[in-house]
Amino acid sequence: MSPILFFLATFLLLFHSGSSGDPFAFFDWDVGYKTVSPLGVKQQVVAVNGEFPGPIVNVSTNWNVVVNVLNDLDEPLLLTWNGIQHRKNCWQDGVLGTTCPIPSGWNWTYQFQVKDQIGSFFYFPSTGFQRAAGGFGGIVVNNRDVIAVPFDKPDGDITLFIGDWYIKNHTDLRKMLDNGKDLGMPDGVLINGKGPYRYNNSLVPAGIDYETINVQPGKTYRFRIHNVGISTSLNFRIQNHNMKLVETEGSYTVQQNYTNLDIHVGQSYSFLVTMDQNASSDYYIVASARFVNETIWKRVTGVAILHYSNSKGKASGPLPDPPQDFYDKTFSMNQARSVRWNLSAGAARPNPQGSFRYASINVTQAYLLRSGPPVVINGKRRATLNGISYVPPETPLRLADQYSLKGVYTLDFPERPLKGASKLGRSIINGTYRGFMEIIFQNNDTKMQSYHMDGYAFFVVGMDYGEWTENSRGTYNKGDGVARSTVQVYPGAWTAVLVSLDNVGIWNVRSENLDSWYMGQEVYVRVVNPESTNKTELPIPDNALKCGQLEKFQNLQTPHHKTVSSSITTGSSGPLVLFMLLLVYITNFS
Image 1 (spheres, rainbow, N blue to C red):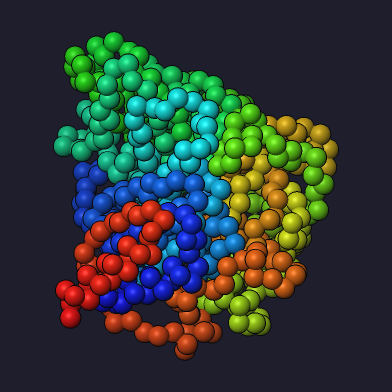
Image 2: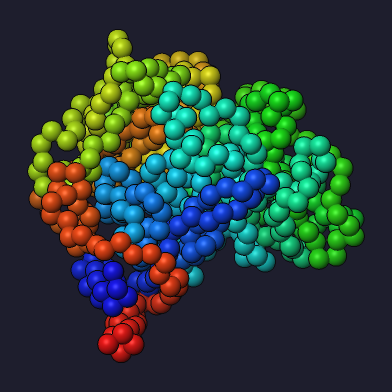
């Protein structure tokens, strides 16, 4: 698409579905490959505008975000926005159930509003195992000025992406799973796309580029930590520094100090950290693998450096200790239970978070979603929920509904695990609009899992070891269970969440462990307003891509590559500014 057509299309799109009273932020992204060597071996990663990790989207509550994405990869691409709820607008969710992938060489423009949200989130590519190669970046949603924040404004804001990493390309990892193989132990852990500081000459080769965080003594910084890895839970800690937890995935938490915290795949936390040490040397920032054999997995450790401006020397010596027993899941679960909702703080709105009393609402639907070790179905290694391994149809579910296509999916996902052999399927959950759903994730695998729900924040009300039973409800947290979008489920254990189904659309519930998700451990929840109204869901975007049964209706783009990268942020006059830019382009290109 030419620059003129892009700006004209976006201009028309804004007037079709934009919220004119709220500011707009515009971004122009080229998503392509880049060669880097984070662990000392050259490999291909996915970069956004040449950046790995990608740029941070920094906006405020209720802003409209417009992202023009050019797919410069050699395969289809979708970007999903982990934790952004897309109120009334699942069209922008960026998963295969709602959106056709962007073909190679094409561009597509996302537009969504961060309605009634604050906090720390991230985006990443959702198809083809691409997250294993990068393509991720941060999303910061700031409070509006009129809403009080439950802590003083920090002196700086720092985002860290932590995650396990393989030196194989994502296409090779994908082939391993397709051939029924396990990925095995990762080759390391990256922090902000970089390998570990050389804290140990035998474990870390020379010449590795590592991350350094520069700080001023006496200052307090907000650290936003995202586990963007494939399947490894990581223990995060900063040597000699307390970390005061203040927020997770859009909810303000009860403020308490941690010396370390387990952060599971797909989860996001933010801490306040005060630079109160004497800076006799630099300090280690560590993300190390949890629930594994420490002797074998010692190299699967990410190490960055915290550098005071008055530091007297480089960091040296052993890393700060992790929790004493790498296999001590009881410590980790108790730590998870300690993360609670701050009932007195306002978030995106002035009323306190605790004014929503979830425990007083009657549950209208309950689903127990059981996972287990991978199974073989039709000769292929697959992952399941309730005995069903999801296979995405060629036509996205929401498009099938829009055009009344039959046979694309079935609306009969079981409330309890199926008996008998596991099977492939396209069965989804029929959610009741304005109902209150209980979901119990039962992990009968030997590996840690974490699960995410698009479109919502759910209340984490309970977790324990063993099989969930009806009596387990007696142990639920009925007061200050934290609201978030990604929750861990320990092996041989269960986690229960409650969610208010007030957001119309078709929403993905998935394992955030990338290998399990790739092998079919996901389902969708369909939430439809039975009343005929256009007030509870936005119309299909004018630029919606067509694929599958609708492919013949898609206007083709001529593949094009390497656009000029830019990002524009405007206030509520966004459409006017965009129109002026259009005139500039017409003048330059006519």
